[in-house]
Length: 437
Ligand SMILES: Nc1ncnc2c1ncn2[C@@H]1O[C@H](COP(=O)(O)OP(=O)(O)O)[C@@H](O)[C@H]1O
Ligand SMILES: [Mg+2]
Image (cartoon, rainbow, N blue to C red; front, side, top):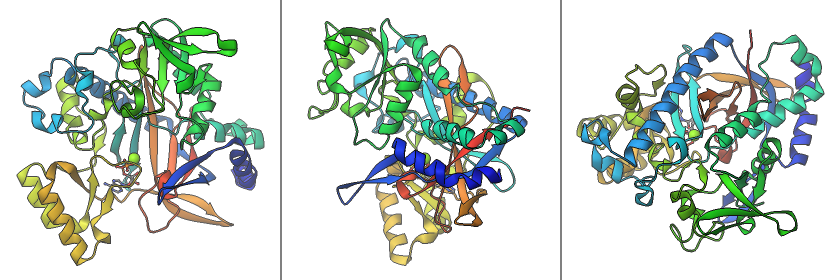
């Protein structure tokens, strides 16, 4: 472990050279910043991981069942488990996806589930990311560099090998392949996760494509390859959001999408990973209902808990939230990247009153949660070891079976007073070691 710490600067220098950075927009300007890596890994025991695995698989299976149901029969609404207007009011629900059954019925092929571990050891799910969760490439490349810097560390510790991510991704894509090559659609060099797109394409043997490399003819998607060779694409791992995917179906002004892609998808000629319309499943308001979904679709008790959550949409919850705002964390359901997350304790009198008024006016727009005093992990700050808040993004892949990658992205806050770990808020990351015995 000390050897890893000694090599941290080398590893960070290599990460910078490989382009492990992400861009953020501040005041409408594009800034690129490094994603700082901390050499002390998060360690998860074998038994603990087995429990997480069980809970995560169950959760993602239920969410996939929910997505099939919402864009199909809508039984969960008819049975009154989730209020109908709550679902259709979500920005994540796309009427354009009504009645489309994605290949093999899978909507969320790659799910990034965010969890924290409380001080008593209990894990809580903070949110589900079913659209284009990023981050798997960072522990993957960091592990590779650490292994090179200190092979001994990995000989002496029984750490589950995480290099299988590329195979998991490949198998997941192949399972839904409609006949053709695998491609990853990137918006390009200026996207925050461009490094990840190119790295995953290279590792999994998929073509890295931008919109100008792809076109649709007679409802079939093609890739324009080397020397203009036209190759059919059977599965597209798209790394751009729904609204930009196809200017003929969604935003007409999109310059990064592929015209007629949705028609090819609707005709069953190409699988889209993850499926368009998944935003209804990871809406922060819908999160509240996931434990009910697990009971409803799988007839099982949830293995992992949600953070205690209140929906101001319900009168009783709204009352509680307004009375206790100062100790709660409030989230705007349509925001991400840590932007819409407000801790009541950080607000002064007038700000608190303004937020209360807003919650009363737009109650569907917010959820509130108890603040979980989750565990700190040690990070190196210069020569000092200091504790910082850290969460875990677990990656769950759904193909023939649902599997959890035995690794994950541990993000930490660099600010000692902050609970928010998102990279867009200046957080760093660690490797996650799952012990193999
Ligand atoms: N209930 C909570 N208690 C403590 N910290 C929280 C809570 N909810 C969120 N956070 C912190 O804020 C971050 C962002 O919250 P999250 O729900 O994941 O929204 P986002 O979509 O912005 O990532 C989390 O990773 C965590 O660090
Ligand atoms: Mg998050």
